[in-house]
Each structure stands twice: as structure tokens, then as C-alpha cells.
Amino acid sequence: MRKLYFLIFLIAGLLFFNGCATDGVETNVQSGNRNVNEIASYNGPKARIAVAHFRCKAAKCYSGIGSGIKDMLVDSLFKSNRFIVLERDETFNDVQKELARENGKFFNKKQGPKGGHLERADILVTGAVVAFEPNASGAGGGIGSVIGGILGGVGLKSKNAYIAADIRLVDVATGRIINSTRVEGKASSFSVGGLGGGLIGRVPLGGAFRVYKNTPMEKAVMVMLDNAVRSISRLIPEHYYRYK
Image (cartoon, rainbow, N blue to C red; front, side):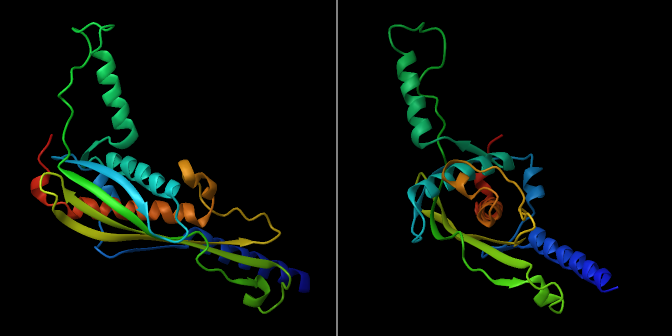
């Protein structure tokens, strides 16, 4: 009978902490919320924007983190279907070089694109990573402490991550700041020591963020990007949405 109780409490404990692993995501957007599915299903006029490189202001942030956030935000804004997203930085330089090359003497002048047709951005999205904590806090313990000490020795480890960015929307023609906001992402997960762990969902990451794959920071980054798309789409004034 004692063994039966042991197994019941073991299963109950694992189910409890598995629930914590899948639901341990916290978000906070100071500028408000909007449903991501509502944005993705949008099919009206679009705003024309570009995204600048994100600076690093957090102690643990480095340049690869800033460029990674910028690249992922570009993809997220494009997929939201509310924006005409214009390429800048390295890729834009490559476009300029290709146009110059094709206008050279070795190419047929009647074929291919001509210069002077690149689109202008109305809004530039600028930003800075102001908080970057892959391990913001943690707690140790055991399942036994939750269910009366019966399980004893089954270790429990908590991992948490936090990221925040300040974002500004700048009118390119005037240089005026249209709006600004702070977006955040916080995620936590629990893993049971000695029982295989690996309870974190998989979301593709690129660049410097690949080292955080399958960690709470991966969750936190994706949460922050969703919050950023919501905020940007809401904070841009309606008259900027004028392109088909």
C-alpha cells in the first residue's frame, strides 16, 4: 500500500510541475495589448516602415543580441501583414551594389531594374535592449517538499529569463518621434532533475540567439516580439496606413 501511495504522489507531482513548464510565461506591455491573430488577418492599407539596428544598453547584452532582435522584428512585422517593410543596413547596401553592377557596361541596358525606384520609408523603428537576463532568478527544491516529503531526493530546478526593449517610432521626413513604448518578455520553466527534463517548447531562433534555443530566454524573446508587433501596429497613427 505504501508503494501505491508513493507512485500516486509521484505522478501527481510530475503533472503539477509539467503544468508549470508549459504555462510559465509572463508578459507585460506598458502600452497595452492587442490580439496577434487580429493583426495577422489584417488585409487593409499598410504603413511603410524600416527597422534600424537595436542598440545594447543592458549589462549582459552584446552587439549580436541587438542585431538578432532587429532581424527577428523585421520578420515579425512582415508576417503581421500590416506593413510594407523596407530593407536597410547590409542587405540595402547589397541592393545598391547590384544596381550599380547591372548598370555597368557588361549588362544589357534594356533588361533588369533601373535605379531611382527604391521605396522610401515613412517610419523608422529604432530601439535599444534595456534588459537582458538569461537567468533572472531561480529556485531550488524538491517534489518531496510539495507533497509532504514522501518523494524526498527528486530534485527540482527553476530557470527564468527576462528581456525588455525600448522602441521609438520616428517620422523619417521630419525626424519627429511619433511614439515610444517599452515591451517586455518574461518566461520560466521547471525541469525535474534526473528524470530527463526538456520541457521547453521549440521556437526557431537565429544569429546570436541560437545559444538560447530550448531555454526560457527563447520563450521570453518570442513573447517580447509578439508584444512589439502589437504595440507598433497600435501606436502608428492611422494616416500612415495608406498603401495598398
